Length: 282
Ligand SMILES: [Zn+2]
Image (cartoon, rainbow, N blue to C red; front, top):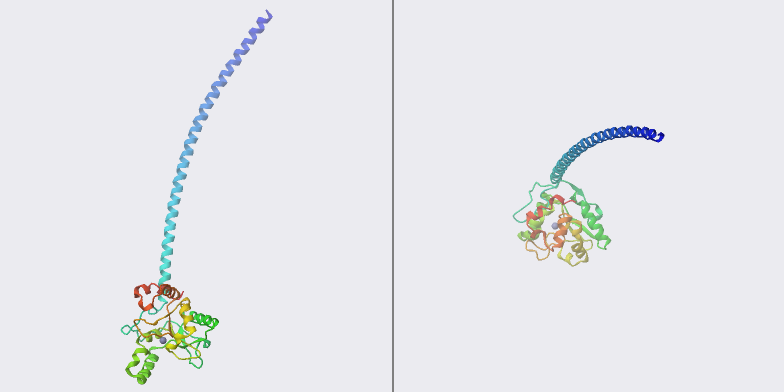
């Protein structure tokens, strides 16, 4: 009997507990359902946010591309402005080919002229002038020639139109009309440019073909291009008499390319030469 009562009591206790558990189960299930819908919503929010982020990233990329394009345009533009500025400060006549029919304008004067230091000039000569943007190249060349053991000196450099006319007059008086062959319809323009010098051996002191027999001349032939100089009228050229003393500055790039291709300045097309004008003093 005691046991029955006990069991009865225990049973009702279990019933209650079971009911509680069932309630708890329902509550938990409800919570779970709520939570999973919250998770679903959160996932959707997250996806939306990610999409927005991706869009923003694309916008940013596009914006960056536009900025780079703009920067490129600016660079190109400022490059053009720099080039134009550089060209406006470069005598456009400096790389022209001159001939008996194409002369330099008599009014032409180089933009800059500099006195050549006396140690490069033949002793007892009056002051000589060279193009101010090229004089360093000239002096470097003669320094290195001296270091290699060759004391060559400049005997003639910039000549104005008037000086040249006077000089031509002298030659004509002495040699008659034959003076045209060397006093130079062609070489004349080049001296007026300010970028041309006549170089001689300090011992022989005169411009003559014998200079071509010297070691100094050989050194110039092998090295002058490094300083931007070329021989305008080499041996056996078809334009003019051979002038081993007459060296013209045309810029390091052009002189180097002429040397590499073993070609002469006067053989090149003027349009091809003009491409070097922008960097003639670089
Ligand atoms: Zn000359």
